[in-house]
Structure formats: structure tokens, C-alpha cells
Length: 564
Image 1 (spheres, one colour):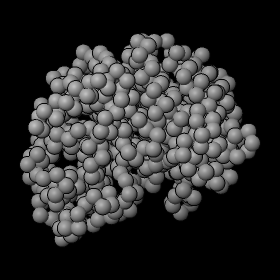
Image 2 (spheres, helix red, strand yellow; image 1 turned 90 degrees about the vertical axis):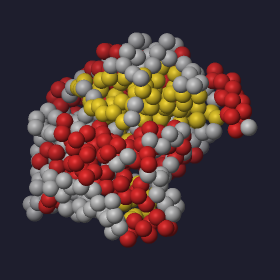
Image 3 (spheres, one colour; image 1 turned 180 degrees about the vertical axis):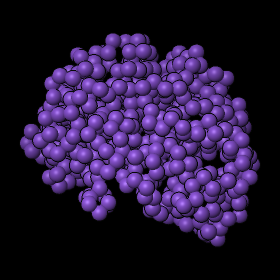
Image 4 (cartoon, helix red, strand yellow; image 1 turned 30 degrees about the vertical axis):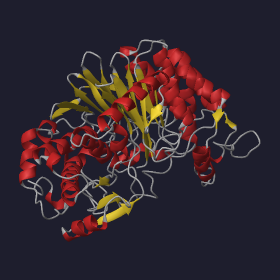
């Protein structure tokens, strides 16, 4: 009877494919899929696929659309990473992480007592890194795109100039940020209409200044942002308000194509982002340790499962703090060792299965023998797949920007280690690899990831969430590969987070049983509840149906998967 029901369900799913209709929180698509934090951006991306564009084309269009529809994280004022798997199985990445300005230095945020001055690494224009998004999207398109650049930016221009309907979710955020103090200058009127009031749900929200900036990018490509009128206004605004980014910083900025990091798990190949992202290194470390632990034999969500996962996280984050930074400034990072199977086996052999380890920064290398970002996933009919994560750091970044340009600047300089040599139990890190230096890229936790099976994309996944990104993606990959979960269920399943310091397990409230919590505390783990960890956007491939399955995290009010 169950088999008969599943056959009927599969036939029903096939009937829904043409329109990319959702079924049981998943969306089905035969010829392509886009899953993003806003349904309009997903629709823009799918429309590009329908017009003959490939995954890179859809990615460019989706990213610029999110800069309009999802301003808390979608951006042209920030930066991020792309992992691309081409239909022939070749994998590459694009690093468009922000850089420190030429006038930056390792003690730029400190007062005369060596303390961080007024939260200056997260607030104000000193917290702004040189944006990389436009350069990264342009570089990826120039190498692998198919449709004309102008056609890919135009949908975002239309959304900005003509407006789109304000949702309740966005309105809730708009009311909150419009009340921020006057130092967050652009936020005062960002969501207000011509009547001076915050645009209400159901009304059109238009962004004419952003539309004009996007037109410059549409017509001039990369130079529309990093040279000319936009660059001149960025420099003018910075000088007038205490910032240090200049036109020289902008014209010198370059995105970088880098080789991916890779490991295997069962019959799958996992590809993720190399430094300056720490995500790929940490993800691979943890997946290798899970393989050594034979995690499939451990009951999901059990005490043993949570303990193993938390201890893997602790170790990966300790290595992150000690070793990782911008590879162009740190030539001796032991990446090959950290992602090796032998290293994971040694780590597992030294892991106590009955007791929590302790996090201690005085024992680097000996101990174990944020924020807002957005992610979207894309796949086209030929099997080209994109996993892209980009960010402004905090929600709405620095909350500052020129009204003439219409976009918000990041506050990514806060991702550098702010006080040289000082690492604290609360999570402040002071190790050398990630100290501020001119033109250096700050360490990131973004973890765009593609999993392949038989040389073809099987899982495309990523998430926002500051340092929790790494662990959110890790657990979702584990859910799909080790526990054979459907993509929507893997996304919604219980998540935990441990980042070495502070020494605690963050867990999603009500998703761990009282007995499990008690058992973990008896193992000397410290537990702290939270409402939600991560906002995942994922795609898997169903070989039986021959279709892509997309799912958007329920934590995203406007997010959606769109397929055709």
C-alpha cells in the first residue's frame, strides 16, 4: 500500500513540474531551479533560465534582484563567494570578499589603552570594507556567462525604479530600522515613500537612487561601480563622514578565481570555498571526522549525536582561529593537513565519547590531538550549478550610505581580529593570520557548497548566519548524505552550534528533549537555547524522477524556490 501511494505521489509531482509548483514544502523543476531569500529574485533567475541563460546568468540576475528586494543582506555594497560546478564536472570558485582599504592598519580600531574604540570595528564608516559584489559577478559572467550583461541587470533596475509590493515581513524590519539613531544615516528614509511614511504592506516600494546606480552598472559593467560617477560619490561620502575608502581603493579592487577545496563522503564528492572563507576548511574537517566516527550508526538528535557534532565543531573552529586568513597574506596555512582524512582520524581517536572537551586558547595546536548574510542556489537544464553566499555582515551592514547611490555599505571590517594578540573566552580572536592589513581580505564563515554524485551536482546548499553558517551547512550536508533526509526536512531539522569560544552549545529551543539536554550537561557541556540557527536555501537532484528539488528555509518570510 505504501509503495502504491509513493507511486501516485511521484506521478502527481510530475504533473506539477511545468509550473515549478511546491509539494510538501519542496518545489520541483525539470529544467532548472533557483532558491533565494526573496520570491521575486528567484522568479527573476528562473526567467533568465527560460530565456536560454545558464546558471551564471541566472546567478547574476538573482544577485542584483536581491540587492533590491532583500536589502538587509542582498547587496552591491558587500561581498561574497561563488562555487560553480560546470556541466562537465569541473569546479571553480570566485572570491569577491571585501578588502581592507589602503589606509587601514592592525590597530585602527583601538584607543590609547588598547581597547576597541566605541565598537568602531562594527559601527561607522571605518567598519566598511571595499565592496566586491559587482566585481565578482562581473568576472564570473565574463568568463562563463552566456546572455548579455545588460539583460541580467535590467530586471533589478526595473524592480528598483518601478517598485515591488511591500510584504509584511519586510515592513516589520522597515519600521524597526527606520527608528535607528541618526548615525545610521541612510536608514532614516530608506523605506519611506514620497509622503514621508514607511511604505505599508501592499503598497509599491520604489528605490530611484538605487535604480540609477544599477543603470550605471548595467551600462558600464564593473566600471559602472568602481570608476566614474558612482566611485566619485563613494569617495565624497566617505570623506564627508569619517570613512577612508577612496577611488584608488575602488579601482584597485579585483575579484579572484580560486581552486575549490574537496573531500569525499561515502559515494559523494564535496566541493566548498577555500580561504579567505574558513567555511570550506571547517566543513571538510568536520565531514571527515564524521566519517571516521561512522556517524550513520549514531541515532540522529541523540545525546551521542549532539556530543560528536559539537566536538567536531569545537575542533574545526579552534583550527579556524589559529591558522586561517587571507591566502594572499598567509602563504603557510596548513590547508592540506587540516582537510586530510588522516588528520580527521587522529582527531577522532583523541575524542572522549563520554565527556566534553574544554576550549582553551593557551593550548593552540595541542588541545585536541553575524550579522547578516544571504545565500541562494541555482542549477540549469544542462547541470551547471551555482552556490553563492554574499553579505553585508550585520543586518543592513553599517546602516550607512549615500542617498544619491541608494545602497547600504557593509561593516565587514568587524570580521578582522580587532586586537592583536588578544583572544578571550567570549569569542574575540587575536591571532595573526586575520589581523587588519591594507588590501587584505577579512576571514569569512560563508560556506557555499556543492555536493556531486557520479560527477553531477547532487546537492547545492548554503546559509547566512555569521559564524553559525559553517555549522548550519555542515549539519544539512550531513542530514542529506548520512541520514538520507529530503532537502526540505534536512533544512528544517534541529541544528546546534559550537564555535570553540565561547565554550557552549547553542541549540534551537524545543528541538532537544529534556533528557538529552540533561545528559549533555552531565557530560559537562554548557547549553544555551536560541530561536533559530541559519536560513538555508538548497537544491537536490532526484534521479528517480529526473528532477531538481528546491526548498527555502521557513525562517525566511519571503524566500522561495522556483523551478520550471
